[in-house]
Image 1 (cartoon, one colour):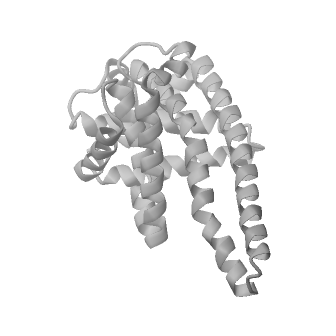
Image 2 (tube, helix red, strand yellow; image 1 turned 135 degrees about the vertical axis):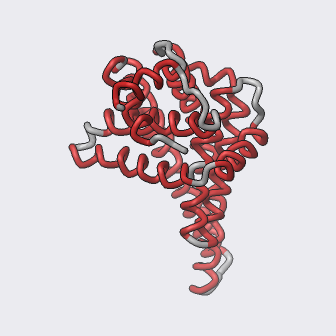
Length: 242
């Protein structure tokens, strides 16, 4: 059973004791994602305009034009996934730093970039996971919501096992969900917690997002450890919160 209180305490204690790693990681990740998001939006707009111009040039009627423009959406989605996937190695590097702290060590800033040693697996696993969640959301909002944790879980698996391949990471993420379905609930709770930082003029995101991500890794490890003895840092925190 997941000790959510201990996981949340772990995230807070690590953020408080090693703020440089967590804050630098979030700043770098935020800058990277902002640049990717801007590029993706520009390219999506260009693609939709090209489809619209093609429809106009073909002399299509209004309904046909709308269908042709709608046909550009899958291409836009594909572009978003491709452009967003390079952020995956940063996630893996971040989780590797959290892993070190979970096991009783202290993360260094350089570990943020360690995920690039698993560039292709993290890139592909992230893209596949995003597509799965997106398709689940199209079928119905609930399946997409239930599947949403597989993105972070697949990154955690690659962070834990440097030899883990992309498809293996995605398969393991589904196995993790089957092993302990409540991880879905805690993932949603932590996602809401992370987003709450936006209420503080977005500055709070530098605190709530790394806290929630570190706590999620602790939740993931509790599931993977099968309720067994967690890392040294978690032991200490569990004792102090008891």
